[in-house]
Image 1: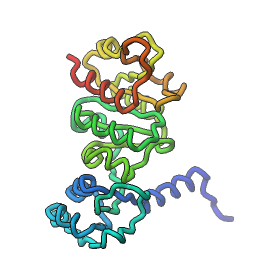
Image 2 (image 1 turned 180 degrees about the vertical axis):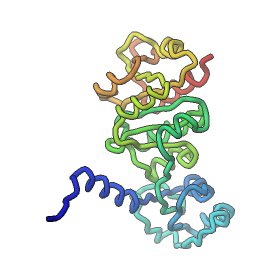
Image 3 (image 1 turned 60 degrees about the vertical axis):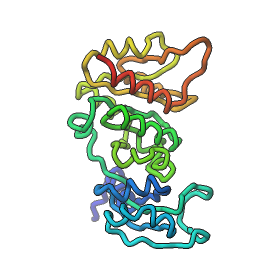
Length: 261
């Protein structure tokens, strides 16, 4: 009689194997340069034109990689057609930022994090990562499923922030929120229909760590996410102006949270 593993164990092992085999293609001079200069990034293959190699010479030498020099007309790498690669593409492993508690409690920057509820557009997530780095947040957190994975488009929009700003994708967003609450974080969900404005919510949080929770444009925060927040707050808008793009809302919220006294 054989001992069959439980389904959840099999699924966990399969996910671990997939993660081990997962790679990402980064493209564009800025994104590739920052990745090459990042010692934490496991780099596998570098494809560049002669012109791009000249521009990236210092970063290539620092990385110790042996680049593949290709003709610009034969730049054959598996990235989306039409991507502005500027003659540079790097195949690498996704970054491992460690566990949520390690980053949220003792990570660099202010005790401030951003949670993204099903924000799938890589350009939006990339822009949020840039803002999070600018305003000193410790992490941007999103669920494994229904979120933007680490891709070349995300890295290019993040303009280097992906190499420096922790981007944690967790199994369950609500569980991560409860974990943050147990660490002392106040969970502020951004929602346009509430009467409480963001300034008031931040004042009520006092000096405690803050987690800003934002949803995708259109659907906004899911019901479970809303229920898990400590308070819902809105960014005041003049007249009948509609909702902000999620990356703009994140930038404004991060600024407000980082400058509170």
